[in-house]
Length: 85
Image (cartoon, rainbow, N blue to C red; front, side, top):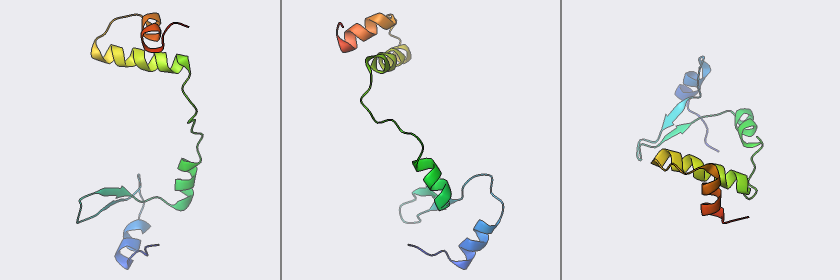
Protein backbone atom coordinates (compact mmCIF):
# COMPACT_ATOMS: atom_id res chain seq x y z
CA UNK A 1 0.00 0.00 0.00
CA UNK A 2 1.28 3.49 -0.83
CA UNK A 3 0.92 6.13 1.87
CA UNK A 4 -0.03 9.67 0.91
CA UNK A 5 2.29 12.57 1.56
CA UNK A 6 1.11 15.48 3.70
CA UNK A 7 0.68 17.57 0.55
CA UNK A 8 -1.53 14.87 -0.98
CA UNK A 9 -3.62 14.58 2.19
CA UNK A 10 -4.22 18.36 2.11
CA UNK A 11 -5.20 18.17 -1.56
CA UNK A 12 -7.70 15.41 -0.79
CA UNK A 13 -9.23 17.20 2.19
CA UNK A 14 -10.93 19.85 0.04
CA UNK A 15 -14.35 19.43 -1.56
CA UNK A 16 -14.38 17.51 -4.85
CA UNK A 17 -17.03 17.29 -7.55
CA UNK A 18 -15.19 14.36 -9.12
CA UNK A 19 -12.52 11.93 -7.94
CA UNK A 20 -9.00 13.38 -7.78
CA UNK A 21 -6.74 12.54 -10.70
CA UNK A 22 -3.14 11.45 -10.28
CA UNK A 23 -0.39 11.68 -12.89
CA UNK A 24 2.58 9.37 -13.18
CA UNK A 25 5.33 11.86 -14.15
CA UNK A 26 7.42 9.16 -15.83
CA UNK A 27 4.76 7.69 -18.12
CA UNK A 28 2.25 10.59 -18.18
CA UNK A 29 -0.48 8.03 -17.36
CA UNK A 30 -3.47 9.47 -15.51
CA UNK A 31 -5.22 7.65 -12.67
CA UNK A 32 -8.35 8.32 -10.62
CA UNK A 33 -8.20 8.05 -6.84
CA UNK A 34 -11.27 6.46 -5.23
CA UNK A 35 -12.06 5.64 -1.63
CA UNK A 36 -12.28 1.90 -0.99
CA UNK A 37 -16.05 2.06 -0.40
CA UNK A 38 -16.55 3.83 -3.76
CA UNK A 39 -14.35 1.27 -5.52
CA UNK A 40 -16.26 -1.63 -3.96
CA UNK A 41 -19.56 -0.09 -5.01
CA UNK A 42 -18.33 0.12 -8.61
CA UNK A 43 -16.86 -3.37 -8.72
CA UNK A 44 -19.78 -5.14 -7.04
CA UNK A 45 -22.33 -3.78 -9.51
CA UNK A 46 -24.12 -6.47 -11.44
CA UNK A 47 -21.99 -7.41 -14.43
CA UNK A 48 -23.30 -10.05 -16.77
CA UNK A 49 -20.44 -11.89 -18.42
CA UNK A 50 -22.58 -14.78 -19.62
CA UNK A 51 -22.56 -15.68 -23.33
CA UNK A 52 -24.53 -13.30 -25.54
CA UNK A 53 -28.00 -14.33 -26.67
CA UNK A 54 -28.93 -14.40 -30.37
CA UNK A 55 -30.96 -11.23 -29.81
CA UNK A 56 -27.99 -9.41 -28.22
CA UNK A 57 -25.68 -10.48 -31.05
CA UNK A 58 -28.20 -9.35 -33.66
CA UNK A 59 -28.66 -5.98 -31.90
CA UNK A 60 -24.90 -5.43 -31.79
CA UNK A 61 -24.57 -6.35 -35.47
CA UNK A 62 -27.44 -4.04 -36.39
CA UNK A 63 -25.93 -1.10 -34.47
CA UNK A 64 -22.56 -1.69 -36.11
CA UNK A 65 -24.20 -1.87 -39.53
CA UNK A 66 -26.04 1.40 -38.94
CA UNK A 67 -22.80 3.16 -37.97
CA UNK A 68 -21.09 1.92 -41.14
CA UNK A 69 -23.98 2.81 -43.44
CA UNK A 70 -25.26 -0.71 -44.09
CA UNK A 71 -29.05 -0.60 -44.54
CA UNK A 72 -30.23 -4.22 -44.26
CA UNK A 73 -33.12 -4.95 -41.89
CA UNK A 74 -32.68 -6.49 -38.42
CA UNK A 75 -33.77 -9.95 -39.62
CA UNK A 76 -31.17 -9.88 -42.39
CA UNK A 77 -28.49 -9.03 -39.86
CA UNK A 78 -29.47 -11.90 -37.59
CA UNK A 79 -29.44 -14.38 -40.49
CA UNK A 80 -26.15 -13.11 -41.90
CA UNK A 81 -24.34 -13.04 -38.57
CA UNK A 82 -25.92 -15.97 -36.77
CA UNK A 83 -27.23 -18.15 -39.56
CA UNK A 84 -30.84 -19.28 -39.92
CA UNK A 85 -32.56 -20.45 -36.76
